[in-house]
Length: 98
Image 1 (spheres, rainbow, N blue to C red):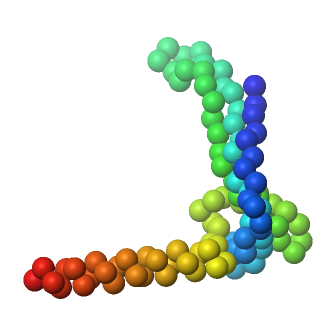
Image 2 (image 1 turned 30 degrees about the vertical axis):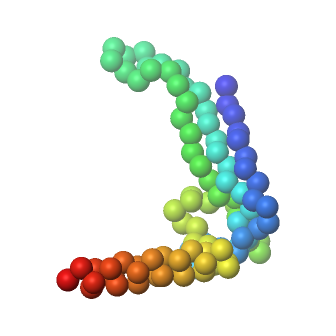
């Protein structure tokens, strides 16, 4: 039994994959059932799966490995600003402790 579980993004997000700009649309989780290994001590039956990002490029839509996606939108910029602010606060606390 195979299954697909798709989570839609409320709106496409600008991203970069290998230097190519595109719009990220959603995460696609794909799973496939595997039979138990016939070998003694082999793997049990179960599901194996993979997660992909569905990204629209100028030449079409492709599934992309999540580790290859770099978001370049306002949401990503906000995250980077929060991280920078958090690091600055931590540095101030470290200086006060010394």
